[in-house]
Length: 165
Image 1 (cartoon, one colour):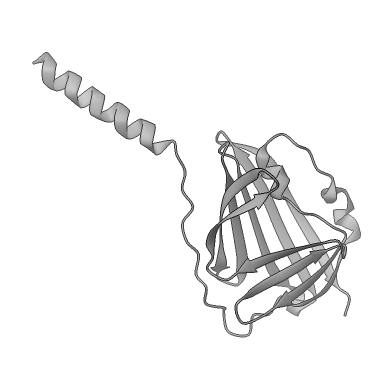
Image 2 (cartoon, helix red, strand yellow; image 1 turned 180 degrees about the horizontal axis):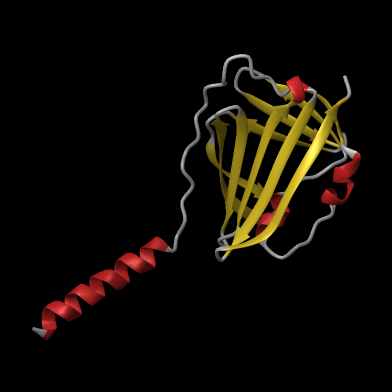
């Protein structure tokens, strides 16, 4: 009678230990009809404090911020320039390893409805999630940023950008 209970308990421990490792699920590559994030964008005055950064996890290494963005959308991806200094490239439907110096992470990106979503999972288990979507008939860009680590939200920011062009 005791052996089946021990076996069942051991099985549950194995399952529980596997559940702790998060994996990133692929995101669709298909661009929604008429969706184009291209443009020059200026951080809205209400969002000025949102460009400040902390360095609690490895995920912060992959977080880029800026007061002005230039987004170029092609048939296959997005190029986002932050303050004309750093350019990030995202391929629609990508799932790849990304690096910043010696720090590596797993990344997926693609379309979730009318938002472009990017998730980056670092080796320390922190997850950076970003999304970009248009508002106000394409005159405003909303960027959501969150970092979670050990099931706790370390950062949650909403940035609003006004179209400049």
